[in-house]
Length: 110
Ligand SMILES: [Zn+2]
Image 1 (tube, helix red, strand yellow):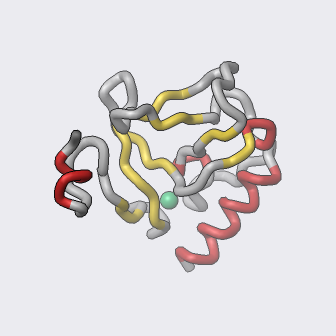
Image 2: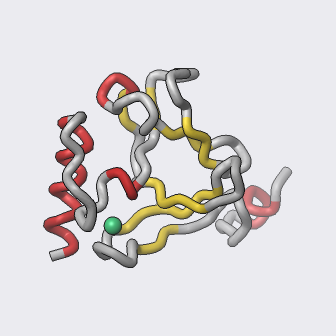
């Protein structure tokens, strides 16, 4: 049993990294540590793996670690890195879903 379940509140541990806003565009995203020990911003929400190009599919493991799925698809949903849909970067041309997210972030950031 973990602390969060016992207290009924979320706690600031690795499993609940919390949301932050992107320095470049101001959009909300979640920080997660990758298996290589770096940090990446993950967009909220799950997306069908078929709508996200191979190499840009992420999965959040049970301990909060962000795992790039590569060509593997352990489930039919995946997450997207904010860095791939940040309007401070060129628009993603290879996925309509990611382009829609990029446009949404561009509007929010103003
Ligand atoms: Zn951004």
